[in-house]
Image (tube, rainbow, N blue to C red):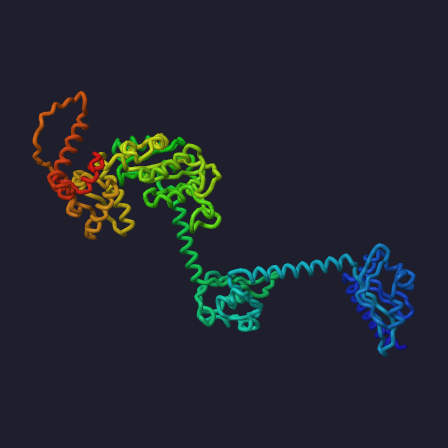
Amino acid sequence: MAEEEIASLKEEINKLKQINRKKDVIIDSTHDGMIAINSDCQVELFNQAAASILNLKQEDVIGYDVREVIPNTRLHIVLENAEPELNRFQQVDDTQIVTNRVPVKGDNGEIIGAVAVFRDKTEVTRLAEEITNLKEIQGMLEAIINSTQDAISVVDENGIGILINPAYTRMTGLTEEDVIGKPADVDIAEGQSMHYKVLQTKEKVQGVRMKVGPQRKDVIVDVAPIMVDGELKGSVGVIKDVSEIKNLTEELDQARQMLRQLKARYSFKDIVARSQTMQAVINKARKASQTPATVLLRGESGTGKELFAHAIHNESKRRNKKFIRVNCSALVDSLLESELFGYEEGAFTGAKKGGKKGVFEEADGGTIFLDEIGKISPNLQSKLLRVLQEREVVRVGGTRPIPIDVRVIVATNINLERAIQEDRFREDLYYRLNVFPLNIPPLRDRLEDIKPLSEHIIRKFNQEYGRSVKGITDLAVKELQKYDWPGNVRELENIISQAMIHLAKDEDYIDTIHLPGLNIEEPVDIKIKPKQEAISFEEHSLKEILNETEKKLILKALEDTDGNRTEAANLLGIAVRSLYYKLDKYGID
């Protein structure tokens, strides 16, 4: 043989060896065990996975009869019968395997051997469990997607629809037939598809407003890419109905409003006071805040009793708990009772299923502020007294006492002592409430507070009205100080508000010309037949004598006007509101 032919033959042999080595590497890298026999049942192939699974060495197997090394093998039967055996279990010593055995045919169709490919049963079982778990997870995800109220659409990496949920159909009016297998923009009525944008940029988009479906539903869309091992596989979109968002926003606003009602909004810093009289009340209120005692706030309407209630709560140890205000004069007796103490299911027609907590339960751990306490009925007074004594409530229609831990603050603008004398208020309840009394002085008794109060009110209304009024002149303050202020600070707010409305845009200060007409009391000349009465300053103070004189003047004016209160107020030279205050003050019916 020529040297050239020998060299060429060696080269071919080397190439075949390289190919065989590559095949061996490939075969040894697989996780499945492989055994191959020739027509004489001798093992020609036994890869590393087979050696590991069967705990045999390759050199102890290759070249030997398969029946010698694996006694219960069936490869020789497959070789004889030329029939494959699939997914068969086989026990090899301590190892159970799952195997596929197939005959090997030559170029002419004759059987030249057989091959078995097998895997440890435990690994097969693990893989089956993983597949089962994946199917369960997939089922759970599909159930979640189908049950959510948010509309969901999914597209693949090419922007073709592959999934929508029932909520999507309800919102857009488009079915699976309209979307699945179709381009991502098939549902867009106005705007561009965010799926395409996300597939291009691989970045999520949020809060994009557009219209979708045949009904051009106004929606907000969030879309995010689906990444698997760093590779883009598609995108998922969540669609929200704008009308539902509006409804939720309104509900949230209502919830916030309710939350504001359950929190004390003011502190002692919000109480405007320059007068020594008011400062003394504030100092006393600060002391009250550091005790658990029931506080009785007394004062005319508009003096700021609720402001003090908020401030006392906010400086107490209960500041982080609920603060609930109840206007006792705003509800009829039966409704007020269920509002205060709650009710059980079936307590009355229309009672809520499961019953309802009352505000005493709701405020547990916090503070309850009972405004207009003097207006509640005697029947309700006795029930309130029991709650304060026993520190527990019994719901309407119920029998079970419910313990409570509530700080109670009450307020009234009526004379409770006179109400007790007239049998309109229980004396025992009065003593329960009058533990820490605070008398809020009327505005006419602290005239030096009118200027700082006016400036505070101006700043408040500047924000509400979009104005930039700088203040109020001293002349206007002096004019306001002449007034009797039967409506107190609330009336001052009304006066300042009216003045700011009348103020021109180029005017910076409220002056006397801007103030609405006030019925300023002038010296009154009413002829009363003098009586010779001896006045003893040892028995009466000056204030008592002046009050008695004023009461007689009012009675005389009512007598001269046949009880017409408007005419009597004109005769006395005071406002009708001032007259009504004085009638209540002196107990004149």
